[in-house]
Figure 1 (cartoon, rainbow, N blue to C red):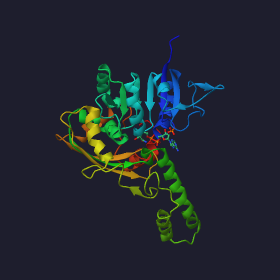
Figure 2 (figure 1 turned 90 degrees about the vertical axis):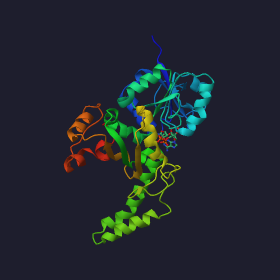
Figure 3 (figure 1 turned 180 degrees about the vertical axis):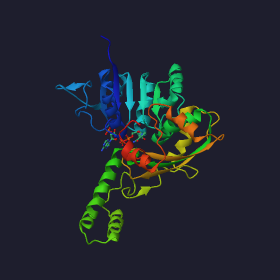
Length: 333
Ligand code: NAP
């Protein structure tokens, strides 16, 4: 019987990792590989799925910093974050480990030895990288990936001269702790509002006053998000770059070129804003086209691009029903 490919999962407890394990389970990927679960904080705990080493019959989580254990495996998938990649990946490669490293963090995205994976739109670029021996496969920034899932068909046709994206990014993009924190903020504000909502004689502006007081309540948790997000937004994501843009905005330009292997480069600018959606980022994009194109041609190009792209009719009814985080979140469209 053929032996199964051994796969180590690091970061499976986090936001990206949870979604990934959920998808891999739904796709029955664990039937065809042997999973081993690692953690930087939970070594020895029960593993979510079998395959990993056993203590007294139950599969257990292994130490994510144990290079010997990692180096035994054919494939390592890290959704743990950039610091972990920077600490572990170079040591593994230095000791001659030649397996596939699949990563969600940005650390390796611009490395010559890596390719950014967005297979519905850059499968040809991934295949060429594999042919030349690339073994580091890295997911792109979520907002850039989503933008290109929608717009790569137009860019690859050479129709776009430049673009500017305005994002409305969900709390999930900042990780598990941020998502939990947004829910905690909603609960805390909700607790303040409940008596006002329950009082038929309460004045409208009392709702507003309670929310404003809630924002400055020292008990409102903000350690993960850095500011109140429930009933608000945060116009800054990630750290500052040299020219006054955020690193999240900067990634729009550099990762677009890299994912689509564009030469000459396509100018990409944007403004990234965190909003109080739980999951599912939204974006508005301004495109400068190279020539005058009928809207119907653009819609037809998008509608046939790949199975995960839907063109929604531009009406109040259709967009409210199908173009909101509430409608899209958790689906593959
Ligand atoms: P995350 O949710 O913060 O999880 C990272 C790790 O934090 C977990 O694997 C877990 O590691 C630890 N952790 C600590 N407290 C936790 C808690 N309460 N619940 C769950 N895990 C907890 O990070 P992430 O958002 O998945 O991002 C991982 C990497 O992917 C980052 O480099 C990020 O930039 C990148 N990325 C994220 C997104 C996104 O939408 N979130 C999209 C694209 C790329 P231990 O088991 O070792 O403790």
